[in-house]
Length: 200
Image (cartoon, one colour):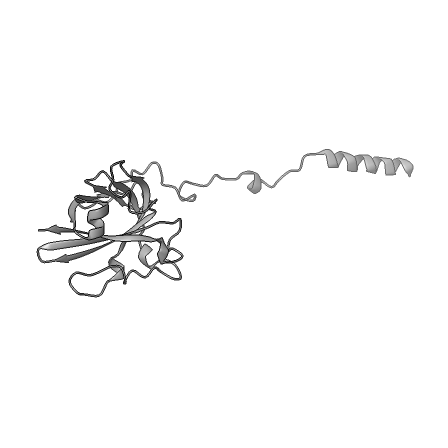
């Protein structure tokens, strides 16, 4: 009897030392595809959608003439990839420059969207259409040493634009915001509004 007990104990000890075997379906894990990981398929070339032509405006409001005298040229930029939105470069004749990425739907984002109506003006007398406000996140801000009052903000984080077209003219209002979140906590994030116009 004692020999049988010792033999059984030896078998148990031997079994405990053996590596654990996994079912075939567990050991044969398949790496996720780029699409499953939210990446583009590298074998499929990405062709960005065409963007509009650059538009050049003259500074017309007191704030625009004070901070960015001269002209503003807005150049749309294409999507860098299928998963990224397009953007625009805002280049001022003073050398001030904002490189941006579009924020589709940003004007109505959040539980309490920012109220633009007190700050944007429709020069035709119509009500502001919030759906026409374009939002941009600032990727890079270049402030030249000779800029009259620096940039729009001490550090500009977001801008919103509103275009009003009328026979013979086009007005562009830019609202600039500081801070690290959108929508902002309150109106103190607004650095100012700046108006530019082009005459056809």
